[in-house]
Length: 587
Image (cartoon, rainbow, N blue to C red; front, side):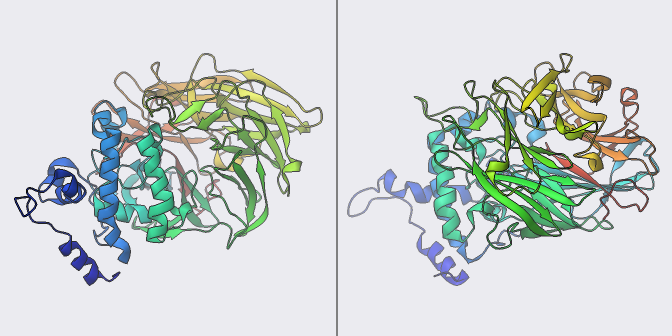
């Protein structure tokens, strides 16, 4: 029954004659509904008019022998989306109506020249790789959000004043099945907004994955962040295992290698979060992860070195209001400690009267907490918790370090929010850049807001200074309506002030555009380098801007436009191919 020939026979036997009179009279519509859903979806011409997919080198039959299950999954999925009224919802869904979320038409399977306006720095030599979630079909067949797409990697090579680009859809198991189905058959975060969507998520984890032989920590799209650790590339997504890939820096060709087991057989038992932290001076990788549990989520913390898990333990969040599904997206490190963030954000189920609701809830009754962990701790009893005394959200951390004059004081900088957001209305909350000073001796803290009325997100620092004293951070700046990004900010964290900024200008959407710092060759100062950021222009094209990090206000030195559209993206990373760069990550 599992052979291709048998699957073909099953498909042939499943075809029904057109409805018509018979011994029992006309066939009832209800009896033929499930099959008609699948048949109509695959009827020639319907797909071209209704949905389109990215052209890639993934063959339509690149799935295991369990492909026979796809018609069943599509039929169930279409019934759920009918109950969910997904097509109607997507008519007002900004992630479907706004051009920046439309996927590109094709993969660039090897380097293609990128158009350059301006002058590229001669001393930039490396790869900028960016993770962009793209929908499986356009328009999507479910209530799509920017967190739901398949991981598509863009690589931009800059060398000798020239630029080339390539792209690649990661070949995760769910990508292969959904490309065959041309339908969103797996549950996504966007499905959390309704009870039918919650049903789809449950089916994905507890029926589809076991049926197809897929581990539940591999039901994901690897669509959020990137990590280069010990000469290996990984794509990361919240609540799943890291997905390993490789890229040829000469040709730009990617290779999807599959999910990686971080525990080497059992010592790591929860999905990883999307933001581990790498100490590039010592070579340690600090990781957190969490999984839903009752009465509260199970959290795991660990340290990797030389490809092995050196230290690890599990713990639960405490308190009567501890969530079953927390939002512990990012963390911070210092030379001797790791800091985990128990936010007032949490994933929620759609349990209101209409069976719909928010995906992430800001719990105004739950105080945020920062937990300080000695790097090689072995028990949750080693964590020192600092209760902030108010609800807060630290979504992405700029940096943290130990005070050079007092190693028992930890300094942490991050945009902080004191409100919730509707993910279908705003791209970000009002993030106020804030300094925390945590005193491990007295168990007290100080908090200072130095945002100067600016809302910011996605802060980055020089990569090899993560965990160590850092003067400068770079972040995106929200536009006034917080539905797009209005520019970039440069922060002086030592003096708690804004020292430079750039405005994208009227009509520029600047979607995400996380600023990546690239050091100059033989850099003399911390900010001696360049900033790479993706900016969507008024013509709806996304271009990569390159700025002088010392002179952001001068505008971009160069803008790069690849031969194929760059979609909405999340996090990226730079890897130097030169041998004299001060960046310690070498290809």
